[in-house]
Image 1 (tube, rainbow, N blue to C red):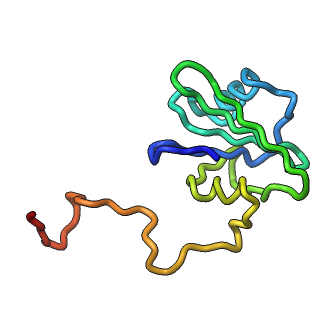
Image 2: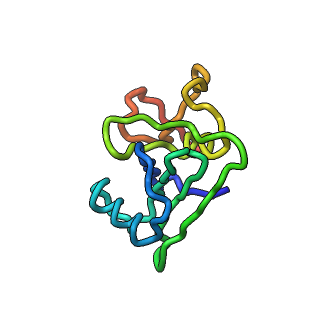
Length: 130
């Protein structure tokens, strides 16, 4: 499994991609179709028409990594969106790659997905000293 920084964004294609494409073909899709820059280190996920294969492309400062997964049985969940690509969070990508149906899963009530400790916009007035 991939270990990702919290700064890494994850994009997934909403339409199937020709899996004969390699590094350069996928970079062209990222630039021309998605309108994104492939070099900041963000992850880009591409699925084939049958949705039993995924390619994940990422830049790591001096070259591209292309991760490829083929399922022996089953398919990956279809990602719907209003555009050619959709930004997903790291948790959804992990569930997607593991075969978990993210449409029926949900976060538990009171579970904070984005916590900012020491946020200056906190107006509760509580200060803590050690």
